[in-house]
Image (cartoon, rainbow, N blue to C red; front, side, top):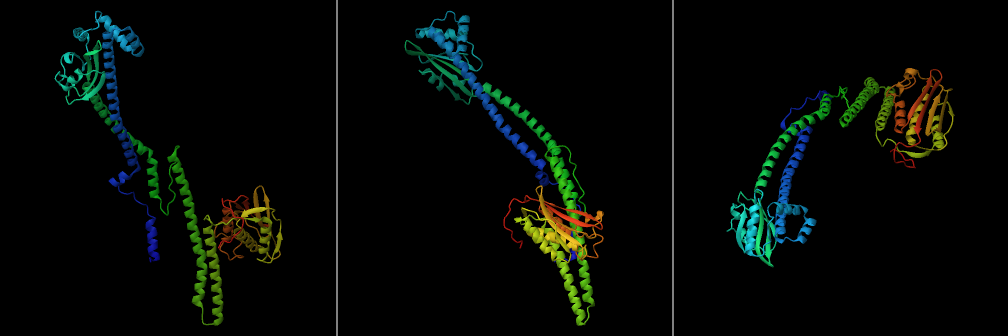
Length: 531
């Protein structure tokens, strides 16, 4: 067990200001500012990681859709020229107005003399004339087959996968049903190949095949290049955003660092540090709440320090008396008996003081009260009966309240007995002490009045403090000065207050004012003891 000197040393050490901890990497990584930045980086990183592939995918889809649409228009134009059917033109006008417009412009400018083929020779002539005037887009190939053999293409130069000996070309040459599809090739000139195959029938037999193929490697290369540029720009913006977020987070969290610094400066002997509460928002509210908490702590520490000092002073007197008499006690039996009686008396006074101190400490707890619904008239008459036994005075019952009240019966009895005991200490035998109660305006009032010596006006607030006595009361009372503090604690625990009206030479009147509604949610209708 530590000695009192060791405990004092520990207390002095604990009261020293705490120096700020050394900033290490682990400390920096644990800061709220760093965690916010890491989360911000993670969210942005996930957005970029998911967004850029999605952007590329959408662009690839757009390219494929455009190519398929262009190939469908090319095939529709060819089919229209071959059939030369008004019925088909009407259908094309309903289903594909763009293809119809393309067809009419094409016939007007290049194929005024085009004649629908009726034989393989006519088909060859038709393909020759069609490819002569058709100029496909870049990476687009118009390929024709007659009687299962390659005939001509536009442009003539084709990549290796589209050479006439390739498997794909042989497959197209034998196609008898319209189809479209795509193939992937390792050839860097082709990459992904989209195609549409249209068989040409003459007299019910397939005499030729028309293929529109498009290599998307060029568009894909452009998309990849654009994606790289987007990634580079995004990385630059990402780094810039992180730097700005770092400074922004530092500015937003500056009040938190101020709170930390202020808290580190707080010690047992200095609770005066406060935070500047500026502006609006959560941090300003936090600063205001912190300041309010520090106000309460400063008051509580002050009261605690004062209470301990006063308690030590009050306990020192009986201890000194007991020690002095025991040290001077001789062998005379009568002297020993008197000393023993004095020691017992002082110990009883110390016991009452300790009990009062414990009671005041319990007043801060939620289980201090045990509320019950009681009859106000019965309670007042009981209080009057108990008070009359305290001393010989002219006791008087002023008035009794009519109705039910929700109170802690034992605590109210204790408070009224303290007031009555206090009244007996400031009155003489022939003086009147009155007790009464009334209910009005949602409140119940219990009072004790006397016609004693009264209390000076400057002391009427101070006497409710712990260990306080009126200047004219010490000669009449041997108490510790906790009685009125206990009365106030009981009243405030009920959600009420204690009022004092006093005048020197005319006496005093103490009134406990309590609300009729209980301060706690749970109320029992049968009183029960505290212990």
